Length: 239
Image 1 (tube, rainbow, N blue to C red):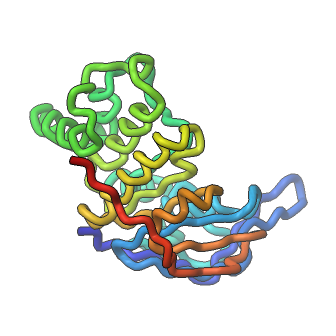
Image 2: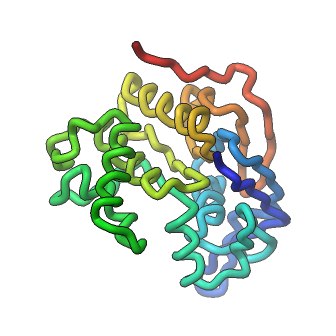
């Protein structure tokens, strides 16, 4: 079960172009409990992806503090953040970022190459992750031999193969049809309910957001609404 709660205190983020400051997040405060499934909604340019990157240690705040579990990310060097991310965070993006010349198994194995681990243990972990996402029979297929939904499942397997505490998903169904989107969202629901993963998902789609247990609304760098999702869609099981 995940032990990583998330806390942001007075977080500000600005980018600079020449001498012009471009604010993105403005004094944001947020708490996410370990094991929550949270959807983050808002218009384009509202700061959703920036917030995701700060929580994932891909970027650092201009001001304020970002804590994930026991890690205070704003105090860490780039080297420390890289090591921390590899152990504690799984990323899923709209574009699958699979290596075309590698098989599904080889793509999933990539994060494990950062660890001291025998090839036998890596093989077991890869097989387990692909079985969890329902692709145990596609291990030797390359991305061009898979459907879009299957490619995203490989990306999810790659995100969970290190057994991270937190899964950060940025528009994970944005490039998929409605039926495949539902399958991917159900799979994320299983990651949350069955494995206790803390999930923060950026989405612009209300139908996707209803799979989360809590919905945050961000606009112009400020949280405007934080609501429990009373219409939360339960994870469907297949026979």
